[in-house]
Length: 460
Image (cartoon, rainbow, N blue to C red; front, side):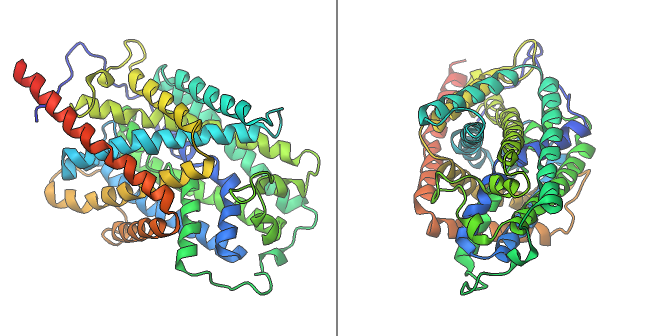
């Protein structure tokens, strides 16, 4: 199939992201809503503080293994599109297209929709937004606002991301410090298993808890999507991935330990979740133990900063995939266009923002996140396996960075990811089938687009 090539007069992506902005993009697209909301659901699944913390650690190590593997691919193939580029190099057009289709319909857009929904939830703690329709309106508004911001030059989006990332990390750290230093009633006894609760919950329940934690870690794969705009990518992409993941692991470990120190597991389990929709989030409860009156407002501000940071980063990175697909002739040609002044893929950014707005009006936060993680985990496994494929297929290609712990690290990631996919089909069949169905819808689009492209080429 013949591919389109950029004309000499067409604007090109600008490498405007240095190491600081690139690391901020990694941290900013990971730390978002999950660390404030998902611990309650995890406690419901596993029943003890120790297993909650173990699930966080396991999800973090799995994400780190994936990031170490992606760092090799990103340094080797530093072009816009991230996994799409790696899958196309390793397996060909169809798997790459299906990944891009998944990111557009479920992954990036679903993530953006969930961040918009979470933003409205946190804003409701400090503003009169009790009615559902008001929260939905706010969700759509914040998505469209940051869609507009990202239609400007990438350096502007990068500076916004750096500022939001620093603010969110400082705000989250202040919550943890407040709990450890000033919390009333906090005790290490809270980390003991409740009487009559089994110390091991079984693999299916632990896997479900890991799935929730993986939502909080999701985003480690996003930065390579903007690799075409990173300066010195062979150096900056690996360092940003490893440094960013180290920051996230430290922040998540500290905050979740603070939750378990401040609150008994029964209070954590009864926090905001699908089972307790009207309850305050666990972070609000933890902050109330040292600031009874203003604690929830402090958390709400931290959560709002965190949410808009991850929202901005997801919009910036996710839109590069439809652009890359269109540039290669696998998607509608209009989406290969860049703004004349901004040199960013404006049609892709707008399409992503509109579809995310539709999703936020049609599904709940937990439904969106479960569907996103399930669909994403399928392609995370396949993409990580591309490290093995490309070492055989392109043995002499320049590799500024090679995966630490190869072949054990990528192999373990693929193995655990496959287990999580199978476990999720068993424990969350509705969200799993929705994710698989949306991916399958990409097949007729791919073959129709391929025939249309071939017919246009023949006519010329």
